[in-house]
Length: 300
Image (cartoon, rainbow, N blue to C red; front, side, top):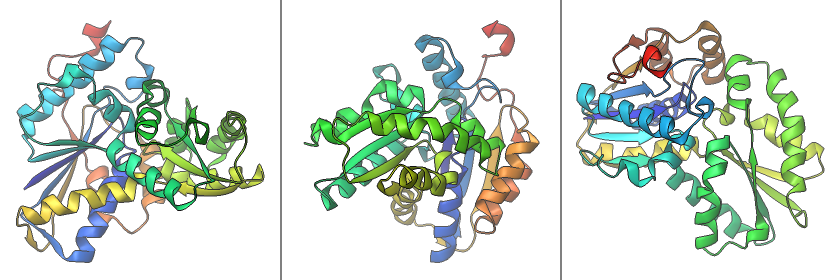
């Protein structure tokens, strides 16, 4: 069985690492290939940097076509909230050759369970501008019956790169000093308890920092990181496919060479719990043709 996990950049490796840890815990992996496919076009040019919706849609479409043609996975999991939200656009209706699942479904379920546990609490959704602009989380929560006054959304531009490039947390802390008060100010009446939903795979690497900033603002705060739960959703289809006892293989694929700073940061963030994921990251496979005919020259 071949399972592909994708994200715009390397933040989604947290899902890959969580899947590796769960496979090891269960002793499963024989006959399983886990591919991590970096869906960013360039290190400094991902989807939130693209100026138009047209470019965002067509770039991700080119990636999906390239991934299908080259790897033809049995299952693709979109670990990226930005891309998960984007994939709900009818533009992608033709991508039905194999199952494609997104982290938004996991995230919504995690938020609903948390809010059901405390009817007086609110949720602050921290995410990228595209994820917030799509209103997918808010719309789904409202459709599930959550009162609108319990939901606020906060776009966090620049935070994924700050987390990826600075493992000390100093850059992320400086941004959260602005984003957390802005988010809390959006509540019409501030609840006593706030569930902080981390709507970007990078954010989970600095989950304690989110909580500390919320507590500093006087909040009872619980952080919801959907990355681990996302890995859990992959286990059932892996078991159903008859994957045997043993070790899975891991490969990380990128259109460009992943820079040294995120390599160092991810090694620190992931620690010893995902040695196969880290080894695949360090020895990642370069595929300049991963996006088909899209090139920097064509974009220019």
